[in-house]
Length: 463
Image (tube, rainbow, N blue to C red; front, top):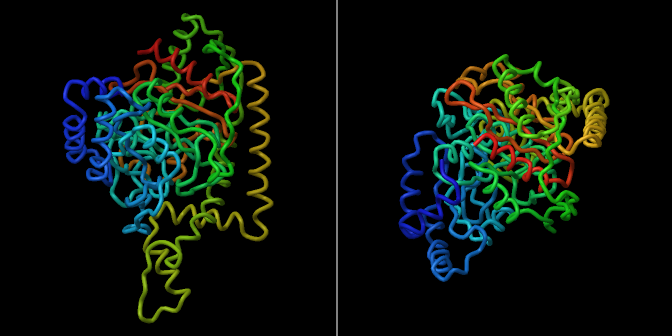
């Protein structure tokens, strides 16, 4: 694995252009199917300017740092497919705000990462480019939907990658690949240029090998954006140092495999020995949260993906005998994969006349109750702790025919997404080699810096 400090050391020793050339050669040879597009020419257009700034010691925060972006983030002049046949051949005419801010801070965008199609998946197997493999164990999944971003960082191709998190799509791959994965609170990073899955849940976030790298990139790309009306102004934070008081969501242990529960208890003992004050409480019901998430996410997906009809966007499959409706039907049937079609159909049914009050409206009410439950917990302590995943990353193909079991990989992460809370996942004590237990920390809305400071303290303890 590679961190920004190590990359900068390589640049000092070799020079930026040779170090970048070696990195791109490794990316081309990547055996994990983590990348779906490498941007060598665009990258080397920007690199000489970065090299000059490094020599003149006039660097920007991310000067010369190689960055990968998930294939649902737009970059002008580059393919944008969301790993779906529907968008094969589409080239974006504009750049996502978060990508542009990273470039303005000096980052070099070296390519685009594989993902579950339209970010719908928990394994990295639902991709038109084929499944991504876990660098720690190629027979297992790397998590999803930000599968390629996680695999690329875990394989040491880049120090940091951008991903998106709707119900756990950054934190869960981080847990599968022994990485640090950060989902800021909803609205902290602009969604402008992020292809929508579920608009009230989608967040841009980061995967890296350490908290310092996460914080550096986050502060370079976060902030309000006129192009995104849901983006938020910065909030004043009261805490000046990392808190060492947290609530342990004890009921999550019952959802974990026995060795995960044992490792989590060991992690808690080490935190307590290091001076942390830990209070055990029951949190919101994870099964109810997952049900509400699936209702809201599929309903929003069915609306957002209606635009890919072969007329406005996407694959157009025309047959001589087709009328207009037939063309749309064939286009959507040929372009979308099985999982995307499943979620569109579910969402459409849930919003149908007569069904919405019993399902969609009920899920909205449960979401508000969940927010209130979390607020009550944060009145007692600034942090919440739980495992990130309930089990080891499963084997490739193991859950493809069992969607309900696949969805349960996000059981412990959807709560923060529904409530719009910042959350971070980072590796702690060893599990079965080569995997480590990933600890999820959550904080109240607007407390990203508090969360990152606490995560840094945890990282020091377990590094």
